[in-house]
Image: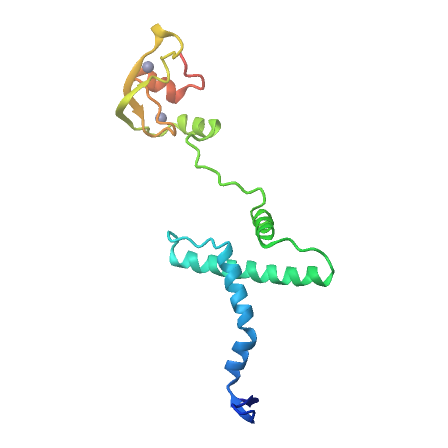
Length: 179
Ligand SMILES: [Zn+2]
Ligand SMILES: [Zn+2]
């Protein structure tokens, strides 16, 4: 409790005791409101986020706001013009992400890796599925030489289509398997 002066109706001044929490609240609520306002301006919390994700991003958001407040104070102390909130957030995002790009899961493995699997001498399972060109005996650009099959190797990375028998053997034993 802290004693404070209060003027009653009629101009009589009295000393009353006020709880410190109330004093602190009145003193700092402007700042809380300002922070809430900044937080709501470029809010990136989405409904779809998991709760723990939300918590993390909320914390990150608070850090971003606090850093902007400190940045502004520093700039003002130096007599420099600070960036506005949006430009600041954009710059921050660029600096945090850098040149990072989400790499998409590639559809096919690299040539050398898929070749290692192709010629690994282990058991390869043949299955049937949709009609595909035979990887070995078919020449796509040569109309009369295009041969299709529903058999494919389920073990090789690209699930290539191939005939049973010699095509299968060639594909899995020869470096240059093309007919
Ligand atoms: Zn074939
Ligand atoms: Zn295979």
